[in-house]
Image 1 (tube, rainbow, N blue to C red):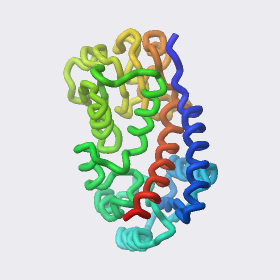
Image 2 (image 1 turned 30 degrees about the horizontal axis):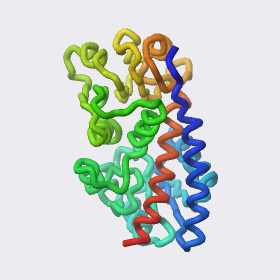
Image 3 (image 1 turned 60 degrees about the horizontal axis):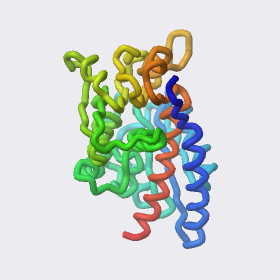
Length: 283
């Protein structure tokens, strides 16, 4: 039976450590602050934003929430970002994605000051991750790295396979594993003989966005399986990109959904916000 990698427990520990760090920073006059912007009424986004607010409270981080109506124009959103870029009490800015269709996601990401980009989606921060000289790491890949560390696995020399090539997870995940000397293969919807590739993985990261896509017969005996997917089935149940029941029988360690990667993403956002406060203070 695979070891369960409970992100919920690891994230609670990280948040407790951050709370102590924030208290110390406040004594030095450094007050981390996070501004979260949400446009429209997407229910999943509403839940994520509420969780981020609660995490800020738990860590002692000051937070501001801007809930904008669906019909907010791109110009109005850019104006708000510009104001927050200049606002000294805000060290991190996050725009909850997806944004409504009439707003261009790329333009919005590019408008955030890279020093306040706690999601690490700005091209400047993406480039820094590429060369290995970064302040911020995208929150989900960073959380995955923490869980791999938690599993007691040393990435060095291991076969690492990522299924999914998004800018938010797949690509930065590959870079982080590479920086720790993993041998990385990125797979995607056009990959031929996918099972052959996944079966070779010592560390398998599933981030493809398809429910129960990775099954037990695609997994190497004893592999570490990290499931980034979060999908809602017709019966309203949550499931990942990995078919948990069959995978658990083969894997050495595996993340559940929910309770695995999700809580880690928010813990890493808090970590980035605290780091942004320190980095911006020293510049």
